[in-house]
Picture 1 (cartoon, helix red, strand yellow):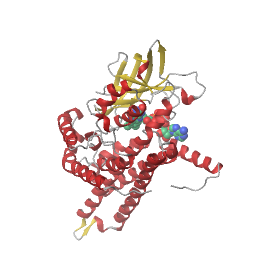
Picture 2 (cartoon, rainbow, N blue to C red):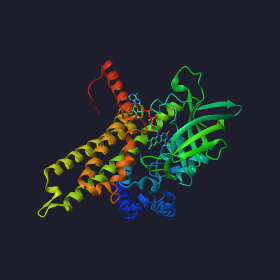
Picture 3 (cartoon, rainbow, N blue to C red):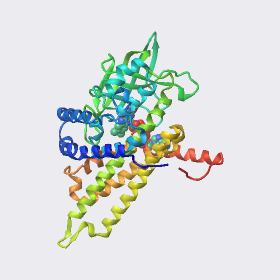
Picture 4 (cartoon, protein in one colour):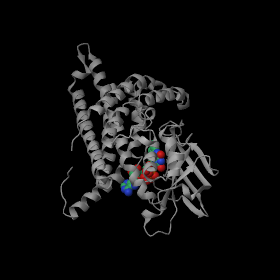
Length: 405
Ligand SMILES: Cc1cc2nc3c(=O)[nH]c(=O)nc-3n(C[C@H](O)[C@H](O)[C@H](O)COP(=O)(O)OP(=O)(O)OC[C@H]3O[C@@H](n4cnc5c(N)ncnc54)[C@H](O)[C@@H]3O)c2cc1C
């Protein structure tokens, strides 16, 4: 495997890094303190600038207005954008839209692509993904209480979801609902259905407060009720009963984006930490950086970040060259490894800043609160570890041994 960065990508990365540094980071203090909608005019102006620079939607298909980068190249862009909490949003590759775009590009029919995919890639609308339910464990994606019943050419959906992130102000949700309860395989019972948010029966109950933050618009997580919510069966993505398989497919490239963004968070905290300890005096003659304990924190962070980064790039390479199926172990492995690395790096950075680390004068306290979700959202650590352990044991059963690339 070769992780050489092409000349074109070096240019692109240079432009992205400069934009993040000069145009986005100065706005962060407002993001931490003001309601998200108040930032709209500024965010839109920045998004227009990105479009003019032809850096818009780096991962998304060219024919719909994106840059169409291959996954291993996009991974590096996601890392650069992860350096600021607003990076992905301003470059048009924010979650959950990114996952939904991947899904619609691959499995949507022509009508769905024109009505939902194109405006989504162009950044004219937003979307959300509605799978996790209030009453049953989200860790078991094959168990859903939300039902979509056939009624002529329509689905009639009833269910109760939460953590439908970004629903406030979104144009449509992709809803996971049970459509084929009679199927013998529990992996073939659910479908993904596009539900426009103005459909009668679709109710946002509340914005769920997460770590003391309710948020709004893209920066929020909704509890949602579907009550006799009627949409055409033509809104099904892919085939009926294919929802679970599509959910697995949605994860691969999405996982790379999340994990590289988290490496970006690590890099940001590492930079802040190294700069702080070089400037902060511990005595009139000594800096914090002169302490051996602080140096071990830095060394541990560096090794953590580098190992996590290589694991993610390796996984991106596997997905690109061998396909999602061949990379399933790696996709699960980075999902628990990288968030734990990130949590350690954030925590050490916070510790080195002392009281300053607890304030909102740096982004570290924000990361400490906000990124804790990374060990739960998109599958809790334990669930992914169990899956990886099971897959390795299966390998040994069939004669394949050792941890290999
Ligand atoms: C900030 C945030 C944003 C999110 N955004 C979205 C979104 O946009 N759309 C969406 O559909 N969902 C979203 N989610 C939901 C997320 O995917 C679920 O929270 C996650 O899948 C876990 O499900 P759960 O919360 O029901 O936890 P549960 O399934 O109830 O699990 C609780 C805990 O039990 C343990 N556990 C669970 N299963 C096992 C097991 N088999 N073995 C051992 N231990 C186990 C784990 O420690 C786990 O954390 C979001 C969550 C958060 C926190």
